[in-house]
Image (cartoon, rainbow, N blue to C red; front, side):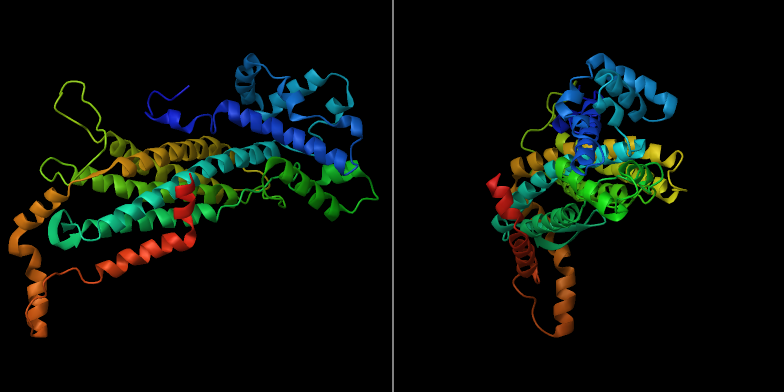
Length: 412
């Protein structure tokens, strides 16, 4: 169900919904079962598939698990209890979850869901790169007035503004590219003592935990890792990437909001939103909603960093729990903003005549700096005052080409 108070939430689909997180936790339990059997820790009859486990949980169970999670402070405890009850007296029930702890399941499940979200975000970023590169190239000679601190400054071209939007999106894409999504498999206190004990005295502990991590990661599409229990870098980096994305999108949205004011009229959204009482209005609704995400994202990212800084001992009391809703809201809302930004830049209407008119109406004032510079240099002002604009546009277009984001965007 979409969020009534976050219009556009439906664009995120099932990403990081309760159902998706529960599904991911079940996948973690099944992958761990497969790893125990594959390494010989558990007997073959202990194996259980995700499909089997999934079939043991009903819609009513999902709601009740959320209620019962309060008792132990996390949803894994009631989930495992139901799964074991459903498996009856079988070896699969006996071995289910053995060697894991609740934090392993929650953290790894979140990595699954967050990785899915950033795959969607990456696709939108690539599409935005392709669209913004086209705007920058098409409008490299479209004159307009630059504005600083809300006031008219000097002449520029719209292609440079689009190139700077492109730069922000490329920076965000780099942050997303750098993300890693590791499994968390450390047992009660990050020592993996339980699984080593289950394996017996003849096992090589390092080899065993490395093998189980590799198997689970392969099953889930994540990266093998040693335990990271109270080191929350995997979470904070994902949060930082989401905030970096919304920063870039917020910049675009703010420019569109400003330049679409009727008194400027240089840009408009492809399909403005309606007003409930004023039929003449075409509100820049997409830009408003993108700006909303950019305004709210930093606080959610700060919650993740505060939780990480508050880390204590081998599992943080309260800080760990505070991450869950923050990372869900931050990343899910970023998916929404990503898709809205793609629509915004793809359908953007650039009113070149209005840009030229506003520049002309600014008169000689916008060339006052040029006159001063020419006077100091002892020559007449040049025909234009655009400096190295072409070079700066080309630099971002080349960067987009080198990263391959344009090719990926076109392929989609």
